[in-house]
Image 1 (cartoon, helix red, strand yellow):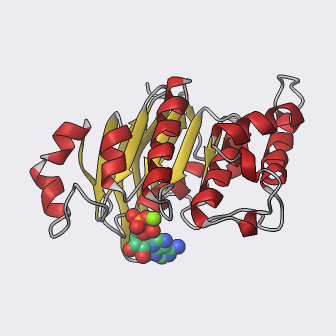
Image 2 (cartoon, rainbow, N blue to C red):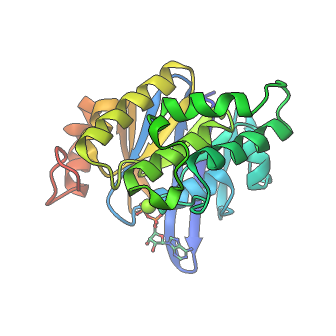
Length: 245
Ligand SMILES: Nc1ncnc2c1ncn2[C@@H]1O[C@H](COP(=O)(O)OP(=O)(O)O)[C@@H](O)[C@H]1O
Ligand SMILES: [Mg+2]
């Protein structure tokens, strides 16, 4: 069993099938990517995994435990954290305060007795935002705000981190830094699952890739096999797998 098991998840919105029996998995120590054209169902799947949407059928398991009936906050307590495609930060708070709120929430339900304030600076340093720690989030460019979201997610000490398009709005240098960070987080034992449009970044950092098209997984494998998979190339017809789509 993998840490995260998504088992035949289907999601219908009225007559529209957004997810059709999607099965995938993510493991500690690995960066797993979910890619696919716009509208393929990637964000919908994240919403199902973290409990913001109830699937029409199928199950999600974390560490062998079914999450299906658990509310999002209970899933967070079990070690699931995510970031959002459209940023969801407290924009009037500083970077430090955003991370602190998450760290204090974690301290409220965690049992390790660590003073949450002691960890904020190291988490902020880890994502490369030490210079901005006392700036309000609404003063930051999008790229840095995305890093604040990651810092806030890390402050909950997740076992599984879901990132929805973390590189959007990042310049080349920031994307490269993000890639290093994702590899480091995996090396520390986190299971990282990312949805990302920047195919080059995905190819560079992922251990395993699942490709979604019209709500179905059409391929999965390592970057080298995905790059040449005929079904994947057909789904990306007109856009190169070497470039951001
Ligand atoms: N709340 C919703 N109600 C109705 N349709 C939705 C809803 N959320 C997503 N969809 C539809 O489901 C499909 C998948 O959307 P989404 O998961 O956002 O795709 P992706 O993240 O891969 O671009 C799209 O056709 C979208 O319009
Ligand atoms: Mg999306």
